[in-house]
Structures are given as C-alpha cells and as structure tokens.
Length: 255
Image (cartoon, helix red, strand yellow):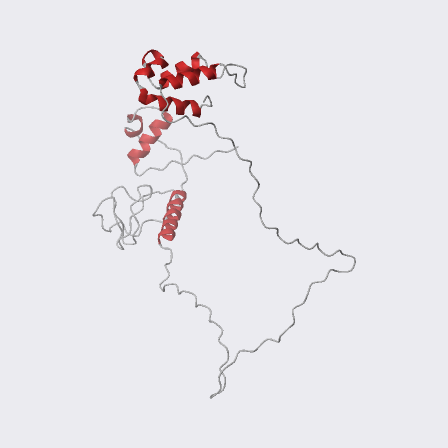
C-alpha cells in the first residue's frame, strides 16, 4: 500500500516551519544549514494573469466581475490583476479552487433568477351566448314548447299502490278536570282566629302519617318571619303579619 503526502506553502520560511512541526526539532535545524527536503509533487495550478496588477484596496469588497473576496483562494493582500479580478494564491490546491468556483456559480444562479418582464395577463372572461337576431322589421319570439298533458304515475305490474293518506283531523284539546284550590284565608283574620285554625290542623294527619302542623313547623314559620325567640305567639302584638302567616301556610299546603 502506498501513501502520498502533499504539503503546500507560500514561501521557504513557511515550508521550514511546517517541516519542523511535522518532523520535530527547532527552526535552526531547517534554516542554519541546507536541508534535504523530500520531493513533493503538487498538481499544476494556472498562474495568475499578471503579478504586476493592481494591489491596492486590500482584502474585502468585490472585484470587477462582482465576486467577493475569498480568503481561501485569493491572495492575503487582496491584490488584483490588470482586469480587476482577484489574484489567486500561489500553489493553490485545484480542488479548493474548483469548490470555491462552484459555490460562486451557484450563488450567482440563485441571485440571478430570470424575472418576467411582462406582467401576467388575466384570462379572458367567457363570452355569454347571445340568441341570433331576427331579420329587420321582425320581433324575435322565443320558441313555445309543445303542450303536454300531465301524466299520472302508475305502479308497475305486481306492485301495490301506495296507501292513500287520511285526511287530517281537527285538533281537539284534551279535557282537563277542574282542580280544587285550597281555601283562601278569610279576610279580616285576627290572632284568635289564626290560633283556632292552627289548633284544628294539629289534630289532622298528613300524607306521611304525622300531624299536619306541629311545633317544629310553627317555629320554622316564626324563623322565616324573624320573630323574637322563634315564637309564633308574638303575632298577638303584630296583627299586620297575620295575613302573611296565613298566605305562607297556604303555600305550604298547611291551611
């Protein structure tokens, strides 16, 4: 198996420094006496057009072809040839140059995409059909379709005809049985009349088998009315609340 090592340098001093790093040693071993360096074969690179071109400006900017400065392929000083293009490095690797040229051409192709010079025209709208014009002096009349008698649908042989829908019947509201309303408290009810009514209801039994009115219900009435000590007998001194109590009992189904 064979190996090939290629070392590129711009001058002798740079080559000596590269050899020192590669072989080990001090710079004096490569500069004080002639050194027999191995022979390295470098691929030929086309030389720059003219070494006496314009060297002003330094790295940066673009050359006459619009190409920006590339430190990988252009000279360190940024010198230019007579035609204003960048001067290439000495002993430049052809692979590096080809890659840089390909990247530059790709960038030019992306930036130089053709732009249509003429604006796009909108499609021509479809033309609407116009009936032919009648001869001069005559008025155009649309054709009259032939009159056809209405046809009645008949079921095919072996198929039963659809049932005839019955005529709608007039709506009859359902009869509602009258609802017996609870008796309305008598107008002008006083405290004695209220107490007598409450006493009568305490003797009656409700649907749950318990007295219709008990002490707990009377206390709840007093609590809802915010009576002192939840005592219903306080109504003796507040007769204006007696009709209110009667209405509450009626709403609770206790009257």
